[in-house]
Length: 206
Image (cartoon, rainbow, N blue to C red; front, side):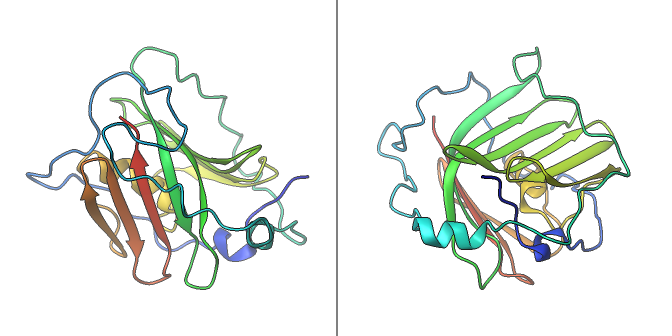
């Protein structure tokens, strides 16, 4: 069965760039991707294992949509080849609350960036993806569920979506105006949108 986020997730606010903040300490660290994603961070770091919503709550969050169609104004991005030279791949866990009224969704996080500013961010809740956000050159794309419901376009991605704010913030950049970024520990961080109540907590597995 395929699911998509409720219609509110597709509403956009103004688009802004993510300039780097002078003197900011990048959260991303160089190194190979970790293969261990069993929910426990090495060295006793924080994990999100205990914050999984119930199956009923998850199904209430990811509902089959009617009246929402996929965006066809731009062609879908090609499948990302994260094994290509130049990609830095991180793995971890994420806890996402889409807004003040919706339950939290916990899952496995895959985040990849390169020096050109491209990014690939995916939240998976086995056995299917919850959100996949990509930026390649001047094109961006975000998909909910298995990809039947998506938005894509050109230029800077909409600042409405935390998934496009995350790579910028982790690398030392400044998130969009409504977003607050906080390093919670050596391997964890939190994004919060004061306007919508959306939060995204991330733990990177070393």
